[in-house]
Image (cartoon, rainbow, N blue to C red; front, side, top):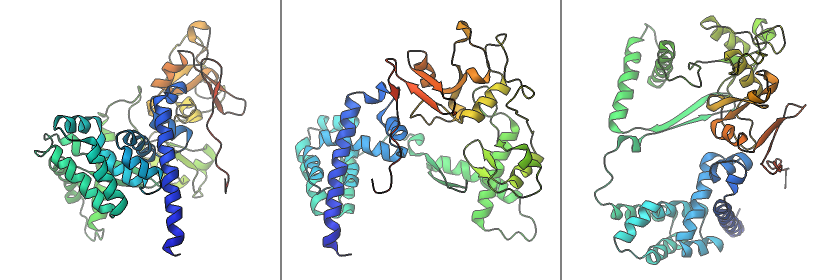
Length: 381
């Protein structure tokens, strides 16, 4: 494909990205997320537009940046500057850095003009260097030594349930991690071990987690001690076949029946039956709070916060009485819904969630209007 056929498409994408960023900023200023019971534009984009957290944050950041970089905004509108370039320049116009520039007597229009000229005329890497040089000039002594500011960890789950880990630690934090891992690496070197160094470190990290979970001294999550759980039908668990993809783990991974049986060898097995002859799902009005059996049943059914547009996991959530206990509502599965702390508060202030006969949940704002999430895009739409 020749460049002359690609360039118009890139320019068109840039113009669309500019319009999208401005639209997101307008929605943020109008407090659109609050209307739907969400706390930020990032969470709204994540839940209602199915964007990743990083992409939603970039859109919000770019929309804010365009207000302070009008020249770069015009270039973006015209298709001459990309969303990625705006994202780079946005680092220079955070509230703290705008205040620092004002204190230094710097002209915002001149900064905007320089960034725009480089974005339009130079390679992307040059803009990165120019922005970094500007930021270094704002704070020539560098930031105060706060180790937590240099730490980050990202966990990316893949379709097969495996996890990729990417992170950055400050020097001291890195030493602590290496010391902990090396202790397990050096303590587990059997004869004939042909694992690579990377494999030994990976096994050491898992062993470190095993030890901490077994010690039972980790922070308690919603009255439940941290644990590794897998949900599987009894028939699949007892079937000697491998049973690929029959066990569902709490953080979203799907494992085979064989792997579930392996976990069960060194763990407790709990039976949860959705019926009158199993765990006490219907506790009656004598017990206002959901016990561990009912909470587990609600977690298995709902999978997380049921408020439309929210993706809060079970360990952030609380068991809510659809009909308040004081109003005669019973403490049972049918009268329960899993809601994160924020949305639990919302439904006690006029918002409403309802479970349909099909098992789906619907959410309504105080005036009775339903909160909806757009249907998935059809191919070619």
